[in-house]
Image (cartoon, rainbow, N blue to C red; front, side):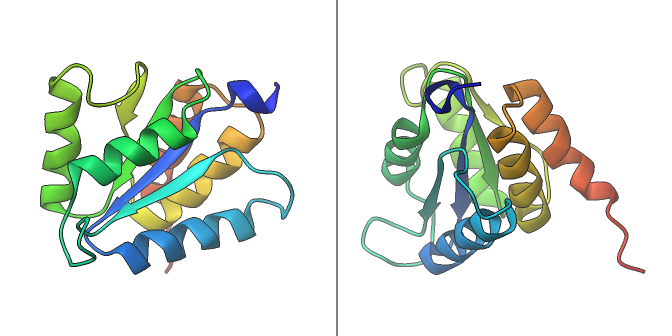
Length: 136
């Protein structure tokens, strides 16, 4: 699959540094090569804690390559903001999807799968499957 048709990943967090760090971690663990596009949308546009629909829309446009955009969110209002944007047509690219997944583990699974050319459904399934990763 060409890089232009990869699924894009947007990481929505209440914190800009958290979103950036998770994106960096996912890139680093995705085999170290060229990865699917991933963008962080954390905090408010003023740099505080919170969620910004404008930052989310900008990040989604940045990673959209025409194969869909998977959005992973960390906490309550981040999820609600993405759901609201999906309900309002035009806020996110066509094919955008909120993925119910753990934020860190799901981001890594989503980016690895997207980088291997997985379609949006496959990327979403890989991220969701991360709920099953047992640590003990």
